Length: 119
Image (tube, rainbow, N blue to C red; front, side, top):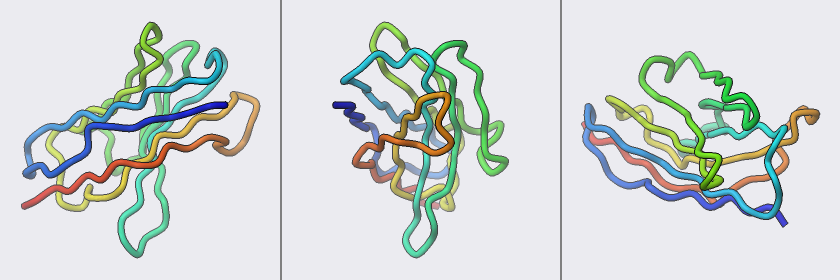
């Protein structure tokens, strides 16, 4: 079965950088989209960014555009989210997700990793 394992969360000061990793296993992810979502306490889960596994095309939420970068390492079946100059409002549990390109919603989810940005 598909497994998504996130790591890299923690406490970071505003303006520092942080890298989240998501290792995917259980199938071949060609023709899949991989994404990061986040959820802060008392708020709905929010889309952050996604990437096409096949051609590397990316898409970002306006709130993180220019500050976060999503990338993939096909050889390691890993998706990365680099957070540059994070802000306190970026604090949340970050989730990795995957879906087949033909699907409308994300099918597979990781367990999440906590990111806390202090001011």
